[in-house]
Length: 155
DNA sequence: GCCAACGTTGGC
DNA sequence: GCCAACGTTGGC
Image 1: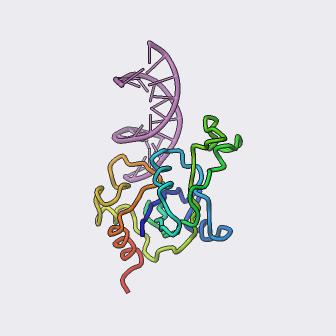
Image 2: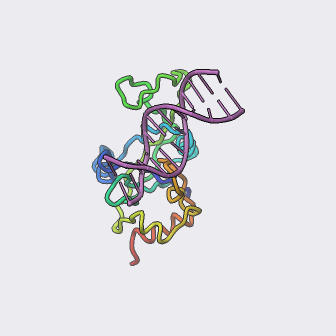
Image 3: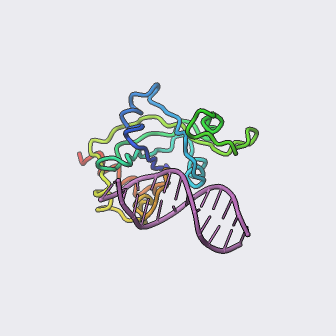
């Protein structure tokens, strides 16, 4: 089962916010990077996504969610009041699509960026690559399995 | 708050 | 098509 990693600033929207959200779901809107968009377009319902807290103290993986809808037109691109409004996106051929995700779990062991670096390299995890700023990235299955094991603790 | 790294834009 | 300028991301 394919995995993604979604970055969010917890001051704006955290794993706890997702857990408390209506239906425990949220539309992952506002992504305005083609590579990140393409990663979401390739996602399927049932895929899992790690929820990463960026610009946090410390930054790291906080939990897990599940893709519950794909290929959703991002409404914020047509909302002039939105920070994510995109006047250049054609209404009859929207530029930005996104996914809807649902809360699955908050990990008992928060995996800080430092800990991730201890275990993985940039080859394993795109976010560990120098200068990587992508807010949506794919995660290799075997790497994902290791992350889950670390994050859930050994029992 | 700093700044390296990156993506996008627009002049040419 | 090149590339300088600009804005943004995100760790520190």
